[in-house]
Image 1 (cartoon, rainbow, N blue to C red):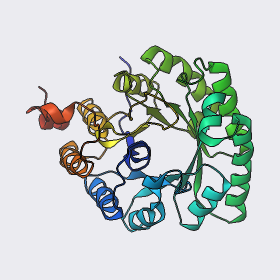
Image 2: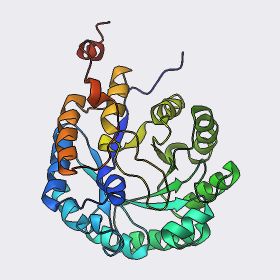
Image 3: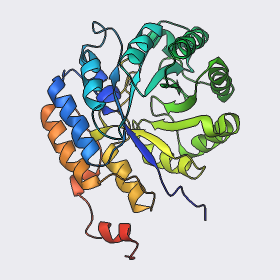
Length: 314
């Protein structure tokens, strides 16, 4: 039997990945409350927004304010997505703990999403690394390789290209690299094959897995990565969101479902799934009629859950 990691980190990305793809523009005060409640539930890594032009993504126009609020919470590691050097400079100025630069392995998706080819994004990554270093900042730089398992615009994305870009991102100065199934094409066998190869290249510089649940396989894909020793995953409360340039892609695996699965298997997250369910209820009320996903909220936590956590058997 394969031993799973004893500790796993879940990074909440609903405030960025979730909100960027829905019509509702959540008030800043509600976003800050979301961050505070997630922190109170035990979450210690949150992607609070993105420094993109507000004309393009008005849902994230207040990222600076949300980041400032998050920075006041003890022990919270706050990350932001940045599409280019200008966004990275804003993130550095605001004291983000980590900058995430998305790099699509699909040329078609890269052009649609960032108006740059993958290799042009790599050149931008080098400039961001130089700016970070010249500023003397301790902010980490993560490069997330998106559409790693295929693309709704382009179709097939080869593993050879994904791994080329992953190595190139490390060479260009990324402190960390991640793999993302942006459109939910992955299956557990494909995750095993690609993540094994990625881990051989990146080693301890591999950061996390990012799985969308478009076809209902996100939890299974997380489990496949767990078996390889991956210890960090992105998730979105209530499974909201997706990518504006990836038609048909639903949100990430629901945070509450992922935490419940991990804790049930003995992988400690430090997060209380019952508190997440309360927060989910609050957030879904804020979002009105927006589509939400996930399973745990329908049935609730089983009566045996706390005993499983305590290791006292069924």
